[in-house]
Length: 316
Image (cartoon, rainbow, N blue to C red; front, side):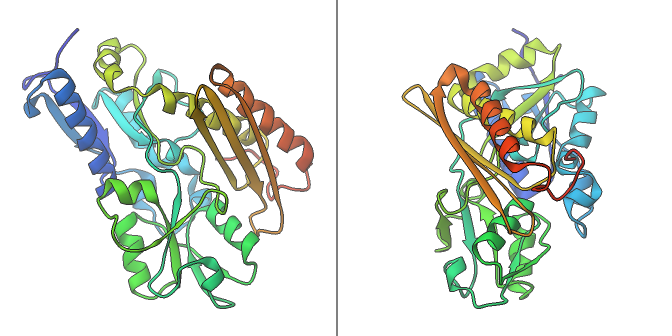
């Protein structure tokens, strides 16, 4: 197996946010330890994505969540980097020709966290309070539980969203617990929301490594990091998402957990204004994870009907 070295380092592409950098450096360090390689055998390449540059608009207004990965994928295709570390929840369901994401790292805690300086839960918020989020899912779930609340756009990385909260631009916001854990921000006393109350985004807390299909030496380097449990969970969740996104643009949540060889999955779709929600759930043997995700998504689509969705076009 080809080994990177100081003259031909393995180039790891990443967004430039503090969280993305932590994830890229952690991947590098795991590879160093597994293959007994010096730090000079790796290069971290920071690439700014469209989603990082345009922060004053909702993602759906500028092209969808694939804008978190577009420039990284272009860098892979033109040979500027050898691999890219992605949050699975930020990835579009279809990959560009020539690229593959077949390495999944161990999954972090998928729950959300309610962050506020004054309130401990959505129930504590007074009528008309403002909730800062750019997530269609979180906004719809919030309005489903509390239709009296007001949603304001909060785009940006963890630090910028916390700064907006400090400035009083909202009464609370939501962050992914996985990101806070990876950043070492564990002791702030913020409220962890159980998945029974707020089902997470598909792929939340999971990391995938993307590479060129023909670079088998990169695959072989990465394979010792691969977590088959996360792979099965993502097969269920992302097939669920792919089946839904072929037909609608609507807030989607889903969580698969693999326990003792059995996949347990729950999913939901919501109207963006929180006025409606449909849920689904099921179990299957681990090898059937993808089939379960597709089947449950089709069940939701059949129950929803065309009038449930807010848009009549595919998701971006």
